Length: 314
Image 1 (cartoon, rainbow, N blue to C red):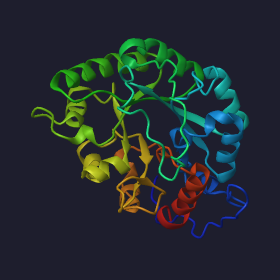
Image 2 (cartoon, rainbow, N blue to C red):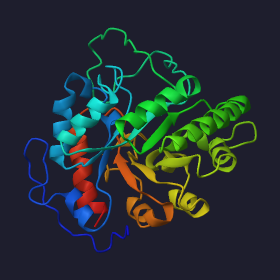
Image 3 (cartoon, one colour):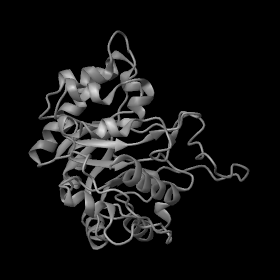
């Protein structure tokens, strides 16, 4: 179903604003091949989307992305909207809202606050960032599940959860277990999204292995961040072999060889062709391009879209 060998070659890209694909878009060709179209994780637009949510999503659609995974917004709620209103907006723009990210535990501001994205003007002093209340699975799992169900998404994803001690790992298993049960009852699928620390040894245990072994696949599936996994030395294909069918969602993220930070797809070190060749083994259903807080997000996601079509998904 996900073989890329016969993918239509040489997709043409026109430089028109967001450099949208001309004629029959990349996402449409994916659909012709019975593949899921390209999606975007909206955290990529964190520094700009809240200024004009509709305008930002119009640009995303013009580039050719067809699916969305939502994330935290400074406007609160779902980019300042109710789940139903956000769903209606995305549908009107021809976008499918597939998945939503939420926190696993109360958010703690990192020391020194958020760092500005690479390439931004750091000479200008910005006022301290005020974070609106953020729901989390530890304290609000049923409300989060209910809102996701109201919006009609299929997947609810724990974006992060504390895993720095043995006690935190045990708490994470408990939180994700009860959240997964609630999601299942509501017709949703709970997934866990990794960074790099999940693969590091914590008091004799590797948190990622613990989550996979102590929570059944019908309660918790995984959204594998291909970039972070590759950076820490975890082989995505080997993970698929060990846990076939448990990876319905992917974050398609590349890592710069120089800075070891997220970069445009095709400009980094991740071997996407090998990974996509094993999509069926993984059980992949949807993938979302993500470049964390990109300095020039629309330029970056256009480049990533172009490289996906021309260099990777041939």
